[in-house]
Image 1 (cartoon, rainbow, N blue to C red):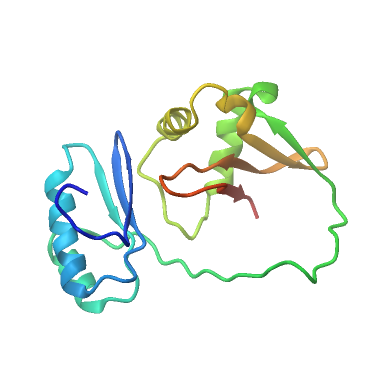
Image 2: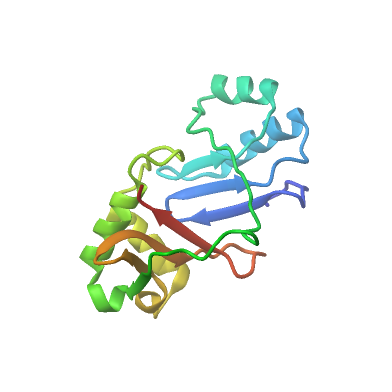
Length: 173
C-alpha cells in the first residue's frame, strides 16, 4: 500500500473510492498515520472510507482532519443450524431476465433505511462499479430476489482482493 507496511489492513479501490477495512489490529497512531497516507494518495473525486473499530482517540483525529462518521453497524452472527425451513418460497431472477433498470430499482429500494448510511453514489455509479468488478457476464451473476410475486431484495457477488466466495445481499424490510 504505497509505503505503508501493514499486512493486516485490506484496501479496496475503485475509480471513485478507496476503502480501508480490517484495521482492528492497528494502534491509534497507526490508524492516524494510515489516514494521512491514504488521504494523500487519493485523487480528486475519490471518496476515502476508513472502517475503524473502537478507537476514540483515532476517531477524534479523523473528525478533526476532515473525515466524518458515516454509520454505526453492529454485526450479529447465527450459524443457522437450528432454524426451521422457511415457509415462503423465493425465486431468483437474473439481470438478464428482468433488465438492468428494474434491477437497479429493486436494489435502490432494498438499500432504503439501511443502517450502513446513505451512499454518495448514484445507482448508475453503483451499477458501473459492479460491472467493473464482475466484468462480462455480470447480468447472470446479479440476482433479484422475489417472495411470491414481489421483489424483496438483490444478491450479487462481492469481489475483494484476497477474499474468496463472498456475496452481498440487500433485503427490504
